[in-house]
Structure formats: C-alpha cells, structure tokens
Amino acid sequence: MVWHPIYAATMKTPILDAYTRHAASQVIYQIFPERFAIGGGLSSAEKLASAAYKLPNAIQREWDEAPLMEASGDQFYGGDLDGIVSKLDYLTDLGVTGVYLTPVFTSPSNHKYDATDFFSIDPMFGGEEALKRLSTALHEREMTLTLDAVLNHCSDQHPWFLAAQAGDASKRDWFTFKPDGSYLCWQDFGLMPELDLSNPEVRDVLYRKPDSLVQHWLAKGIDSWRFDVAQDVGIAVAQEMRSIVGARFPAAMLLGELNGFSGSWFQAGEGFQGMMNYWYRTATLAWLAGDIDAVQMNHAVRDARAGYGLQGLLCSWNMLSSHDTPRLITSVGDAERARLALLMQFTLPGVPLVYYGEEIGMEGGADPDCRRTMRWNEAEWNHEQRAWVKRLITIRQTNPALQYGDITVLGDRLAGNALVFLRHTTVPGEEALVIVNMDHKPLNVLLMLPYSHWYDGVPLRDALGASPDTKVQAASVRLNIAPHTGAVYQAAEPHVNYTFFKPRNRM
Image 1 (cartoon, rainbow, N blue to C red):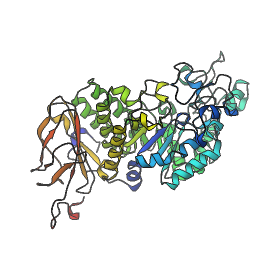
Image 2 (image 1 turned 90 degrees about the vertical axis):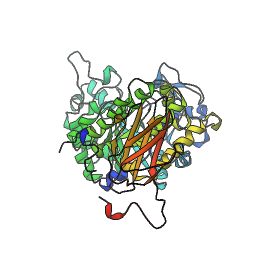
Image 3 (image 1 turned 180 degrees about the horizontal axis):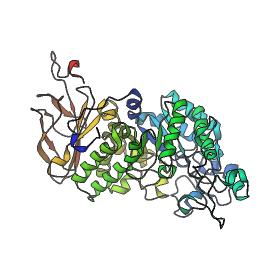
Image 4 (image 1 turned 30 degrees about the vertical axis):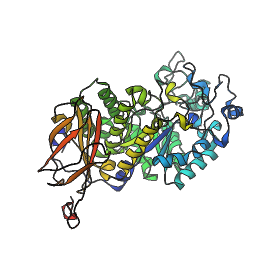
C-alpha cells in the first residue's frame, strides 16, 4: 500500500530493524575542524608557523578574530584533529553520541571540499595518525565518527586533473572537457572540476574497489559517510554504492546532502539510508519567522513522513544550521525562538545534528561568518541554551518514542498557531505528545487523540516541567500551553498495584 497522509492516524506502525533503531537513537555533533580547537595547547600563531600553512594565498588569523568576508577559503586559524580529541570530555558531558567532520583530506583550502589527495589526511589537521587518535578516542567513549566525502569534484590541483589537462589519455575521460578546453566544474567554480561519475574507472577509485576512497577509510576505522551535493552524485550512484559498500561494511551509514525535499531518494530505494533534512529546517525557520502558518508547518511534518518513509526519516539528520548556513540564533533573531527550534529538532523524527557552538548560542551570518572559531571562554557562553540542549538530549535519549517512534500529526486540526504531534513505538507506554505553541495566546483546547494505547485515566506530565499535568480522558487530552512555549507530555504510572501498560497489549 502506498503511504498517504490520510492514513497517518490509523495505519500500523512499521516494525523497525535493530539497525534503524540504533541509527535513529544517535545525536550527532558537526565540527568544522579548522575552527573547533587546536591540539597541544598551541596558540593560532604557534600552530600556523608550521610548514603546512606555507601556501601562496594563506591568510593567518588569531583565534579570537572574526573571519574576513573576502577570500574565505584562504583564512586559517589552526584547528586540528588533536584539538577535537582534547575536547571529547566536553562532548560527552553534552550528551552527543557521534561526531561528523567536514572534509579532512589534503587540500589547499580551509574547508577541504577541493581535495588534492583523497587518500591522505591534511597535515594541517595532523595527518593520518591524528585521525587514528581521534577515532580511537571516540570509540573508547562508544561514540561514532562520520567523515565527509566529495565524490562529485576535486581540486584543479589534484594530480588526476593536472594529468588530464596535460593530455594523459588514462585520465582525460575522468573529467568532461569541452572543445575550447574548458571543463565542467561544480557550479562554475573552475577550482573544482567535476569528476565524470559515468566512467566506471572513476567509480572504481571512489567507492567500488576494496582500496577505493570510501572503503579505504571505512577499513581504517571510521564508521559512516556523509556525501556532499547528493543531487550531483545522483540516485543511481547512491544505489550502486550502497550495494557494494554495504556488503562489506553493513554497519556503515551512507547519508546524502540535499538542500530540499528528499522523498525521491528514498522512494527509489536502496540508496542513501538517510539524508540531511533541510526540509525540516526550512519549515521550522519559516514558521518561527511567520512566513508560513501552522497549517503548512504541520503538513510539512506529515509530508516528510509520507515522502521519506519512516525508516528514511528516522535515519536522516535534523539540522538547524551548518557550515553552509547562518547560525540558528542569527536566523531566528532571539533565544526564545532558538529554544523552540531546538525543541522541534530533538522531538521530530530523525537524528539531531548540532552544529558546533549552537549549544552555547554562537552567532554568525552566511559563510564565512557561520564558521567562526569555537568559543572556549565560558564567560562568552549562553549557559541557559547549553542547559536546554543538554536537557533535550536527556529527554530524547530516555524515551524510545523520541528516538525511533512513528509520528501522528495533529496540529492542523486545531485553531490557532501550534505544531502538535504524537510520537509512538509499538510498545504501549513508549509515547510522547509534543506541542509547540507559537500563538500570542494560550492553547487551551480539548485535543482528540486517535491513538489506542493511551488509555482512559493515564496521567501525562510535561518533561520540560513548564505546562500543567493533564490526563487522557476517553481518547482526548485537555491542553493548556502558554504562548511561545512547548511541552513534551509523557505517560506516568501512578499506581502501586496496577499498571496501565500491560505487555499483552504490545503490537
């Protein structure tokens, strides 16, 4: 049966495999390695004195200086992989379960999306030994490491491209040259010539052979991959890669980046297990800004469930900002809206992706301003926001419904301006009713609840501690949610010699 929105409240929740449940239970922290921390206690000046930074156009910056708006790829602060290792206690305290790094392969830029060697870790970041130290330290904490792969293009200084330009027949058809000598390049940036993924030899070196880029680093101990510009990589490549790489590395997550709605990628089947969920980000920020109403917001959540399917949705990354976008608090304008956005991020289906510094309220506009260095002086932190993020992580990680539960959207049946949805697994008692009230007046309403396993009389308590206790009354719930606040209602077992949620009712 094709999933359709009208079945949201009545269809049977799919039985999820252990892989999906595990993948959906993660909280990922994104790091732009050049801007997070410097290892060995070095200052920027000390680190930037090394030979790795002796590049013709390199601009050396002090750690506390804001990025210059011009020449963004040539500015260096000295962040590296050992710096990340030195801050893992911080990440453990925050509650994240995995780290995702933007590219770390040898490249002349600070962002490394223009690799000159896919098989070496940039000396700026400490080389392969530093990657081993980071991977080992993460695994000792039972945390995962995801790297960023750019299969679509490389640097114009990559030996493959230089050989192709020089007329090397073995490399010429790895790229697409026009009669006038120009070539296809990513969004017309000549520094990033596109690889011809229709060429089997290119796919061999990128992911098909055991010693290919993707398989090489998985064999070295990384856990998963995020693939840049998925629309350029393509669905067919994702499907072939999943088949080949998945056979050797069945635990590896392959996740694509698509700044839009990703339904077609999942409907095609057997490609990327997850996508970066920009769809949620666009809807969330638009709703908080007043650009769309609650009807569209609730439908956007339902559309994702319909288009992505539950498994694809749960394995996708819910992100509110990244190295490519303005930071959250800059986008929404104030801390109150930022907290509501974070509440949605941690309770909607999918894996929360926290861009470094969001938890302490860092600000920043479009690239390169969103790539400011991490603030390690606690006097500069928004401690309230960090406590909020930690609390949301704790709530999510202690409720299976918020990790891998299905979703029933309810808010578009209510007057006002609220997002309302129920998360639920196949185990009665594992649920969460989430309400975000963006109206200027309280949401005081009786909500009809088309869900069979919150029984009459079940007490409900707000895990956030802000909204009053309520209870289920014959498939309905009385809500009283203050303006511009949210609630996460969970069921309680109040009786000593009686339980509402008996194992015999499990589906």
